[in-house]
Image 1 (spheres, rainbow, N blue to C red):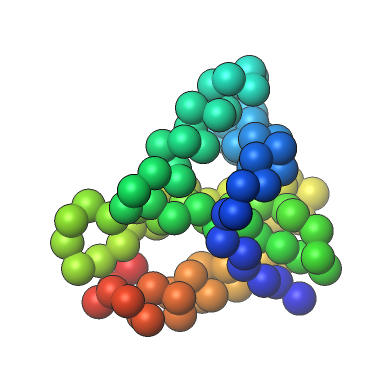
Image 2: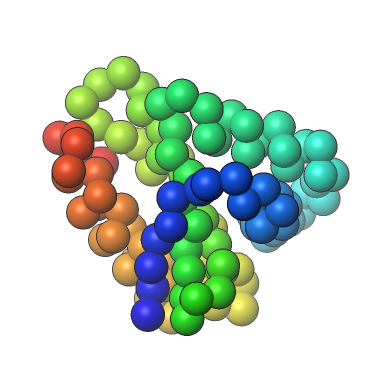
Length: 107
């Protein structure tokens, strides 16, 4: 079962996933400091960072940003490579759409 959990200071888990994101998408190897800089931006005001959980394991994240309009932007989504191609990302997007509908016009 796929679930989302809003970031609540699980820094170590978030840093590992952010480093995995950059490695998988751009072959960039980030330091903890670089990943922490991303985390600070992605959890700052007008941003939301959700973990993607599958069978109660942290396997990815969704980063939403608000640009001042009545919509949120899906800035980044990441699922660990070993969990890709199973529909998990699609399910995470559907869950995010339901969350956003509670407070915003659209995603």
